[in-house]
Image (cartoon, rainbow, N blue to C red; front, side):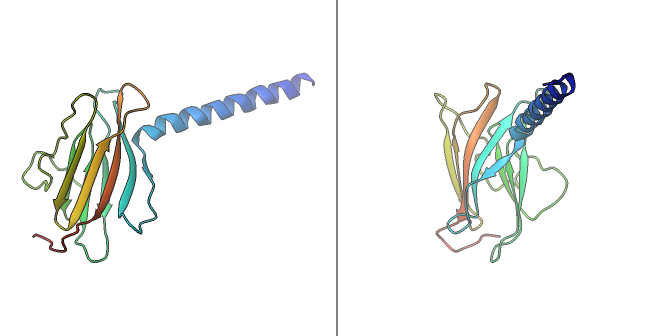
Length: 153
């Protein structure tokens, strides 16, 4: 193989490594869905990782499901969760009285945590499932309609 062929292979290798590196960085804030929505509205893995400024990542899911009023589900930062009626673009304080999840911060004991809430027609379960890196928390999330059909307003 000539110099240009070897150079092309090296450049291709750098391109692949660069793409994989970018994918790894981007995965720190991804929600990976597992559900086909037959049994759960939302089901998957959320990972909250420490960012460059020392804070942890947060993801907001805007819920618009038939038969339910619009809602926001906040996953993170760290081991905080929040559920709000309605959808808005401004960030909301998880400790506020508007957050329907009490407690909003899941307590971790001996590297294990699990919490469930039944509120506003929804059943949310979260479970700590480890992390791919020391500076990340990985959570398994399941959001379903509540077994009780009443929706509080």
